[in-house]
Length: 119
Image (cartoon, rainbow, N blue to C red):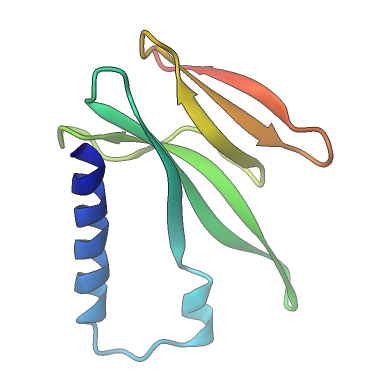
């Protein structure tokens, strides 16, 4: 049910943007953010998700970055970015007590599991 709320919210954002009368240009495509790998906290009050963005190396080369964001499903807090930089973070999993998030960070050919404390 909470995942449906998140998807509903994201669809509202898309609908709101669709009402904008300005035409889409190529540079707008670089601003698109997608989400995935949503995981609900054990108590159901929060979710962690992966935001996927395009980043530019140079004029003809781009790559994707993936960072983790914490979402408050009760609507009391804004989404909070948990990881930063040009890393590829994904596959988040909550600890049973909801105080930590484990995730995989892919750097080069050596992905590693990281544990992020939330308290």
